[in-house]
Image 1 (tube, rainbow over the protein chains, first blue to last red):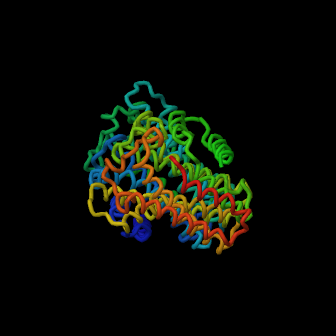
Image 2: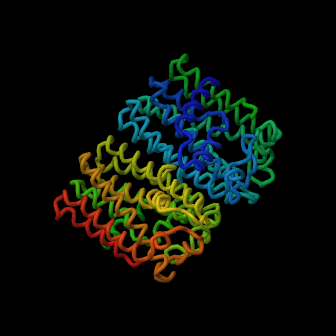
Image 3: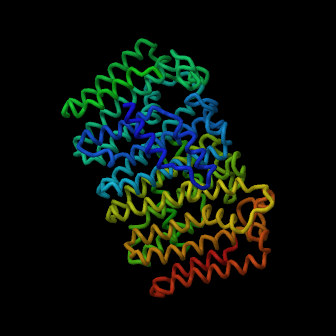
Length: 290
Length: 290
């Protein structure tokens, strides 16, 4: 996974080079190249290869997904949203570049994600029909029925005492799981997976998407800011509903284990050797410490 | 043009229906359906038909471009950007829904534009290769080399006394002309235009894109807020560089006439009957009063 992340970092660095106008590209690169774990791109590449595709077929999509993830972090951190000063151990984008540039850097990353994916995937020789289908999936994962829907309901739920498990799952499925699902499904489509393979991998992705968030919630209450590289305990301060708050810490951990098992069960239909990278990614998401 | 705009309004209303989560869709619809002139969608449809395509082939792209235009208005109006209270005669998005929802409504419109264009253009039977090419053009028109680039340089130029004609043109070519160019070029690509036709229409679009902005600048100093449906004279207050400020009002009007002539010259290669809608659109842009 580490060497894969390095390859992704190189591809991201090449895709968003420091060009004119300098300031906006500096702001885009600042957050994009701040050393995230690259879970989404690595998932995308692994799913593509599992169904028989090559790294080159999915790399532009993998980078696009990381650009969109970065956009959502930049906008989430804005004063009018979560108002966060620290991200990945560094000052947030608007703290360094100002709010106006931070809004625009997010917009530019979102637009460039689509450009990069459309133009560079075509160059890799992937049939256009697959690209169109993948672009449709990607945009659905972001918009008012994906990422943004989760964020909206999340904001609306802050400070409300009786947010139930159902609404919590809605928030996470949309805010976190949608893009993780997108990563896996895009890889599977671009790699030429059958409809059956794409749907199986979609189910896998939905489990690890929710798993990712449950673990995030657990880490928020059990780790320090220094260990996390971002403000710890902020869910508590913002009075946000989380799994540990709703289920308790122990039951949250049990729920995480269950989701990991369900995810891995979806991989049983594939050749175990080929599925090994996705198995270890699921385990990584379940047992990560930051 | 009015009946065309009505058809576009209906398509936009159908595309972004009022669905769950309600609040974000309300915010998206509030700005999207606030009755703009729909110049970009109408250009897109006219370009598609000029090269022999049908309305259905270009309608999703036409709607997508209007969604992106609306997104740029919502984000531009934010307190951290132009801080505007009035748009199209109504309170701006963040005044009604709050800054957080306004940021997200913009993000959602941007993402949905790509989804709508990818999914619905495919349904209209346009070959996938054309759709991929058009999506690449669209995203390029928005990102750090398009719309956003213009906005960044514009913000950086506020309050600077010696912004020259070259930088002014950079700002407008990117901030306004890029999306107008995108509208025309997308229509031409999706309608199946030859490379020669696409490039000819691109040149036409570049002229009317700049024309649009020169006329906007002139109207900003010659009309009242009531006539414009937005805050008049705000370029002056923000100490923004404009054509009237750089060239004087009369020379700005001469420049506008020249751009209109150059634009129409590009249409000479087409059948005059078929080119008539684009000719009147260029004249409309040149002689509009708001």
